[in-house]
Length: 229
Image (cartoon, rainbow, N blue to C red; front, top):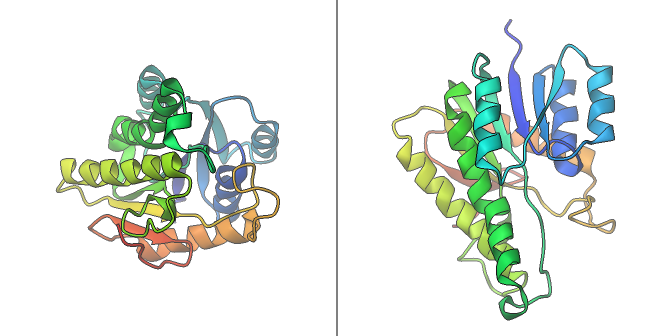
């Protein structure tokens, strides 16, 4: 039986590192990217020298995206998971955020992941999946309180760009998924978050399996429930 292969963008810490660990535990071969060196990820690669390799990528950098695609051009992946992103401005209104910060956060959370998916599209199997880490805060119709307005807007932009990405690549058979991770105990979610990483990434991996083969883009949570756009 062929061993399945995953390319996890943003696999150096938090949920991304947890996804690397979970897919290794499920018997996958994994390539993970890091922007800066992660001692935890490199320790994991030392423990799994035949099944985990590490690549460098700053998701904001188009040159690095193209270079990664060139380095991996002779490989094929079942799963491309784009996890890179940052939380910011929880209690800050838009007027208080500098223009450069706004541009950087949108590039990191929305534009960068979709550009990276475009660059790597051809190394994902036709029967494979391209998954993006989004957030329920990206739901425009569920914006009831306005909190984290810039982060929310960046995730709504990601969702919109992914819908365009899917339409642009039609009639590709690749499954395209947007996933809300829940509030997890990471640097982003905070130490008091209700969910631990190991439990949550198992749920994430289960959702990927359950949604494999879907032919229209989906926005779902960690319990496999549809989130309204």
